[in-house]
Image (cartoon, rainbow, N blue to C red; front, top):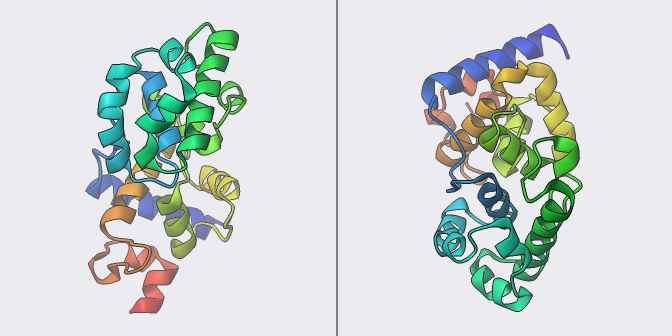
Length: 213
C-alpha cells in the first residue's frame, strides 16, 4: 500500500468520523446471539425488514437453545419475509446447535471460532465481534464494497480481499467504526444506482466522484 493511498484512506476516515460519529449497526439486538441471528437474516435483506421480523422473533425464541430446538418449518415461517428463508432457518438452527455443543451455549468471541459455525462467514463474524464484543473488524457488506471500489481504496471485488485491503490502510482500533460509517454513507449518499456525488464531502478523495464532476 502506497503512502498516498494510506493518506487518502485517513482523509476519508476523518470525514466519516466528523459526519457519522454515532454510526453503529442498525440491526436491533440486546444479546450477542441475537445480533448473530439478525446478521444471518440480513443477507440479501434490508436491516429495516430484519428488525421488523426480529421484534417478534426474539420474543418467541429467547435463548440460543430455543433457536437450536426450534421446529424448522415453523422457524422458516417466522423468518419468511427476509427471503432465502429455508437456508437461513437451517443455518440459524445449525449455528445455535453448534454454539451449545462446542461453546457451552455462549457465542464465541474469536474470528476462528465464529467462521466455523454454520452460515457464518467473515462479514457476519466481524459484525458480531465489532458490535457485540468490541473487537475491531472490517465489515464488508455491499455498501462498503461499493465505496471501497469507487473511492479507490481497493481494486478488488472479492469481499475478503477488500477487507484485508482496508485493514492495511486504517488503524485497527478504527476498523469497526470505519465500516459502520461507510455503510451509513452508502445509504445516505453513495447510492448504488444514483450516487449523490454533488452532495458528497468525500468527492475530492474519490476516484469515481472526480470523474463525475
